[in-house]
Image 1 (cartoon, one colour):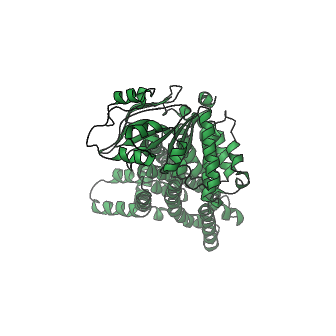
Image 2: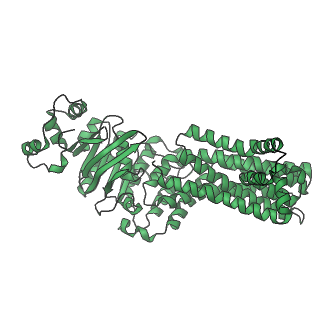
Image 3: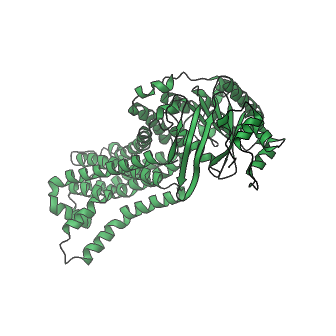
Length: 274
Length: 260
């Protein structure tokens, strides 16, 4: 009775079931609450120190670019490793693997996106700092932060489905975050210095497209028009695309960064032996 | 019948399953036994669709391959270590799994027999190991499965719950449910199993009724019989055809030829 009727139920409906319950579990995790509150507290302190203008947003940007990928990737991976046994129980249920993957992804990502967006927006709302000057930039920051959550939880899925051992997987997640969030711009700058006699604008542009954190930074700094904070790759990006088309192109590239790891994770999950 | 036909699985250079042939009879409890690293877990994971065999087929009674999600609708699975989202309540876990099988009216009889309802409003993290094990058992039986896969099911259950659970298995058997069981507790195996599938080095060395196993090995107890099967052979064991003749009435495919 049940087995034969199952194909009538769409994979999306089954994914939604998993996503709904998983997100309920994730939303109740203490670290998710602590993360949202931490972001809100940072925003509040920066608003008090830097005033209500765009400078508070610039300062908050650095916190966001460091914290959002770290939490999404490392704690996201830890949560996925923690749920592995239950995932195996779900795999033994009548649900296609792709639908299960989508449900698990949305179940982790949506609560983290919500915590991020609320954590960033709340102090601005409470301090009545959303003005015509800061409002559009804040909105863009919320969009970019949500995209970063999506990108880095997708990367967390890639890590956890590819690396079975939890300790090694978490190590890989931390290294990925360190490489993208901390070391990348320094390495690019060193390369640029070493090869400054060569026409390296295009390789530099490629280097920026290869790092979602760089992309996010560039999108927001192009909007804020703060050239000094842009970093080497960002400066090249503005030189090539200009401030008008630049954010759109970078947003598109960030969307690609969302889709590619998601596709890779789903493909690996689909073929994986548990 | 649930058929495993020439199921093969290799991990790297290790041949874990080397052509497993097994037929699981409806209304019978089959215990999968064998030494460590014999391939038992891999075989069970293949049946559940968690691991994809490199070759061969595993088919449900309706002919569906277990890799099809719909085939898994008729499987109830109880893992050795139950694990549920810690921040969901037991009721929320059941709601989630119910929603994955919207056409099935859940069977709450085991839930009632365990008297589990009062615990189901608590978050899973607040439940004891035994209560989680009961919840896991309830889930395995809840969707009226045709195949029950039970991995060390009574580990962690108190004697009363264990007794209730064994009764549930016996009742399921009488309604034609196929039960596949792994256990290291010989007493449990003796009490529950109708058949034994002995797996060693990735092949089934023996598959047949418990009584046949005792007769073939000449042992008087199950643990002695299993120990005999695990011993390296100095001389070949009787040919299957001789065994069939000697034992009369045992269906041929259920005894694996030369005992390796």
